[in-house]
Length: 169
Figure 1: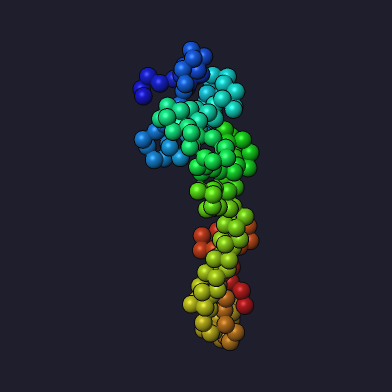
Figure 2 (figure 1 turned 90 degrees about the vertical axis):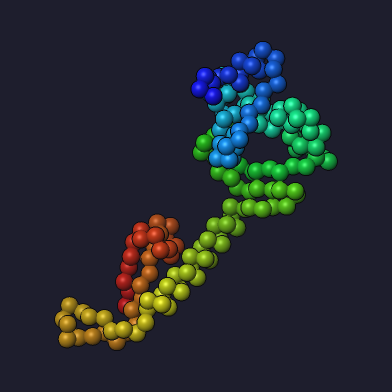
């Protein structure tokens, strides 16, 4: 590992070796597509070939490429739908499919987060809102209306992140 170079995969590929990247680290294993991107950046490997370093090539080396490693009829395919090239650090996962079932969808997730934030804000409001009178600038005048305390995130949704706290009457 200490002697590794970012263009090692491309050198091995150019020498005719079937190259695959893997990791026993749970964090790095989740980002092998970015490791494949290094072969493109540092070694000039075409993107499609670099993706093979983390898809079909490992399956070939394990001799399980008949059932996994590429998207073909009859194969088991767990896959990710990206917002752009999977080799870009700016791409986002839009959908995740496992065993033919959608496990994650960004659009549904965003809607669910907004619903949860609204529900949470309502619960916090119910707990904190009460009917306690509020003091105005003049301590002798009390406002009998219930107070509403809520927070708002940068997208306008309610949250408890402290991004902004507002007091409404």
